[in-house]
Image 1 (tube, rainbow, N blue to C red):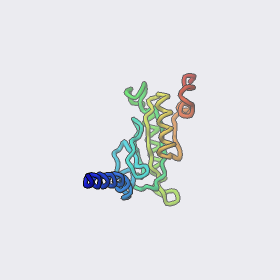
Image 2: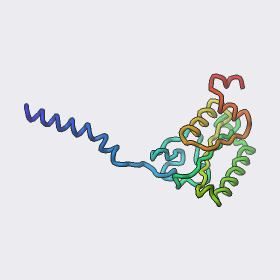
Image 3: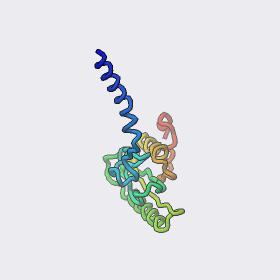
Image 4: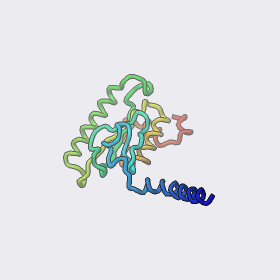
Length: 163
């Protein structure tokens, strides 16, 4: 009986410390975005999934001090599964060129990582994406192609029916 109690105490002690032992080892899943899949971002040393239809687009992603800038654009018309909106793709290409040009010189020795989300012109999706981009990714700026997209991103979902 005494041996069983000692064994139980040992097992309890090992299991109680195992979580802190594993977590306390300084384990890092990633140090920068390039160590994650293309639909994930390295946040607080873990690969975190981005919202659906969001991706890393251009710029620098192998530097954890990169400046995150994002765009929420209706790259497809008529919803996510709709056809490609060529005018929006042209605007995205212009944004990528500007980001690449800024990255040639950098900003105070830092480069920009440019993230893009396809909104599909769906107002609830826009709000969700922009919330994630600003709250989780800590994007310093989110670019839109039109005022209705910007309004949809800033209004609570219950008020979006007026747009």
